[in-house]
Amino acid sequence: MSHIGPSAHTARILDQARMMVCAQGKKHLIFKRLASDQATIGESPVEQTDIRFGSASGVAVAKAKAPTPSEAAAEIAGQLPSDDLAMVLVFVSPYYDPHRFVAEIVNHFADAPVYGCTTAGELAPDGWDENSVVALAFSKRDFRVVARPILNLGSFRVEDGRRIGRELRQELLRGETEVDGSRSFGLVLIDGMCRREEAVMSAIYASLDNIPIVGGSAGDGLRFEKTWVFFDGEAHTDAALLILLNTSLPFHVFKCDNFVPTSKKMVVTDADIEQRVVKELNAEPSPERWCWKPASRTTTSATPILRAARPPTKTARCS
Image 1 (cartoon, helix red, strand yellow):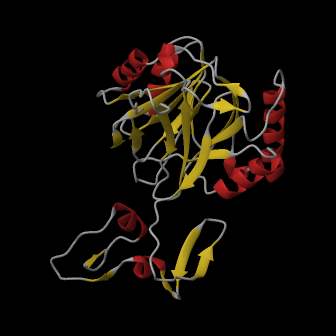
Image 2 (tube, rainbow, N blue to C red; image 1 turned 135 degrees about the horizontal axis):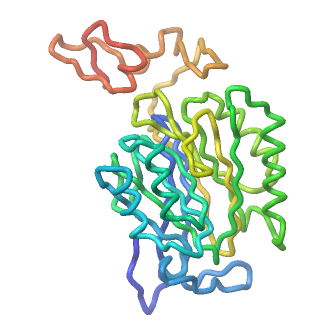
Image 3 (cartoon, one colour; image 1 turned 30 degrees about the vertical axis):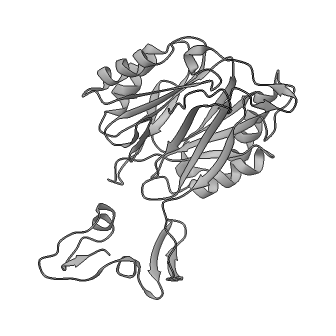
């Protein structure tokens, strides 16, 4: 969380809380809240929230790099408010045992739901990091939160996703005078190895009307073996989590990714759509087309992603 000091002549920007689920070398979707002392929604000024959440932000952020899950959970709990929370959202490095960490963190926040996932790197208040835990606590005064897991993604059906989305939206509507894209947003966390992201997202998006969605795939460092999503006090695989939030505070949803455009054009000429695997680009095997090129005999560098995709049988380099 960053903080820019107040100025008598300019509006203050307070507590820019960024939430990012770090996909494993894939798309990154980021939700970024901007709250200002003088910000308004319609004609109503944004009220001062609990001071523990950084004036008008409604979100408190913490980071831990302790060596064990129990110590990391305790370090997070020591930095965040412990009461009047709508939810606690955690992004946990696979350095920590996910089951042990979740068991520890829910003990510290017995009165608030704890959601989250494992990562492939963490976006912390002090920048990008690894082997850490980043947590965000949402004030109950400023946010209303409802959530529903989506289990058994291997047998996921689009109609089930739409039903869950509709039911959760109706749950959010109860007791609210307005639920739309200006006051509400959704967050989806999904097993990064399920290969069902597109089907799940399309089903959910179609069921939420104009409520925007952010989120992404859970990671496991870059091992591409197993990822975990947290809800109901446990770590789950082959699962996703849909969270809907309604707030009186201003927010902005935007998208970015980890790709840099170049002048080169590539066409997918062979792919396994069901498994989400690109086999050929421009009629050449895709790993070679991406960046496997002849190099000197002494060159052995290659990224972990490429080693996993194609164990090198010849000396090559990425450029």
